[in-house]
Amino acid sequence: MRILAFSDLHCDLEACARIVAAAADADLVIGAGDFARAHQGLEETLEALEPIAARAIYVPGNNETEAALRASTGAVVLHGETAEVAGVRIGGLGGAVPPMPHPGWQSFDISEETAAELLERIGAVDVLISHSPPRDTVDMLGPEGLFGMHGAIGSEAVRAAVERTRPALVLCGHVHPSWGRRARIGASEIANLGPTVNWFETKAGEDNGQD
Image 1 (cartoon, helix red, strand yellow):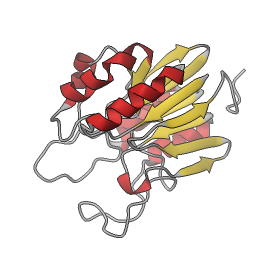
Image 2 (cartoon, helix red, strand yellow):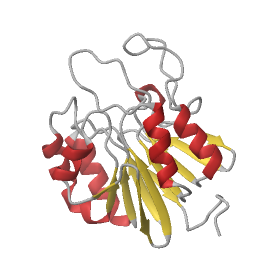
Image 3 (tube, rainbow, N blue to C red):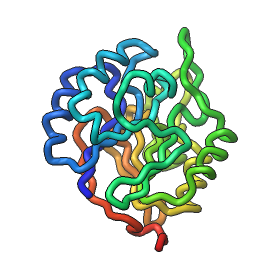
Image 4 (cartoon, rainbow, N blue to C red):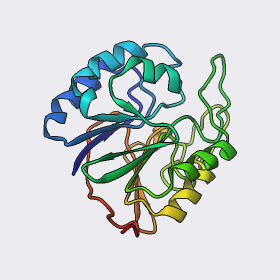
């Protein structure tokens, strides 16, 4: 199955147009969160993506809530849930994990404990979509940091779930300075996507120990 994946559009309508154009060659489109900017512009961004919604799976980022995303798109939305496409099992987890310090607006944050519970419910999948990266992979901030934070800011719960369930692909975003970076945890490929066209090939049960 050929997957087109992206994250962190933050209302960039030109990036939306590029994704829609490229998606003609995709079997599935995955959006790993942050369609809006601080809860603003979600509807306009999703309207621009509407031509691909019937073939898309999204998770919420921390710039839009799960409820707002579900109410604004015809795409499948996952948060602690799974879906199956062409025999490929896909799980999704949204929000910022761990919670972010944020000035002036309410980020959609998930505690590590809640994330661990949701990931346990998801179980073993071929593709895990997580807005937040696994800790110490593609989660490094640049020298300027963010809101006073430096270093790796990914999720311990996501990393533990990847180590336990071994998905073939982990598609994430959230940490802007690490857009375009890739890493591995065992057999699992980790990709921090960013607001660009990213291509992946996968099939059911690939590299994750499933039957």
